[in-house]
Length: 87
Image (cartoon, rainbow, N blue to C red; front, side):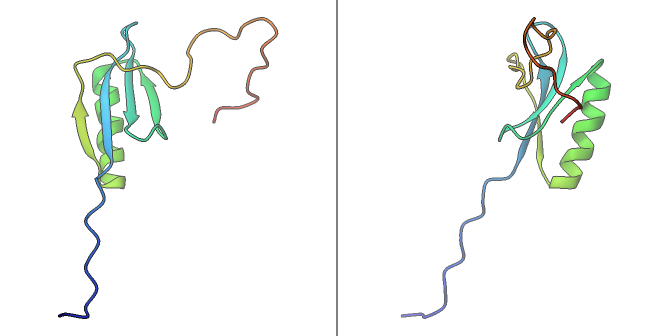
């Protein structure tokens, strides 16, 4: 019987998704809900996503299903306090 510790299995790698929401905006999101960006074009979204993939050793997935924005893009409702600065 070996007394050497068993290595932990590799954690699943980070996945970064590129796709559009139902309104046609290009979004980049990670699978954990910690990253989101909104872009004016597919190429801008891909450029950003590729940089993030390199930084975080993540996988890039182009999704065919609409992404759901984590951050609402609509105007601030009456009585709702806007953020003082971007997150």
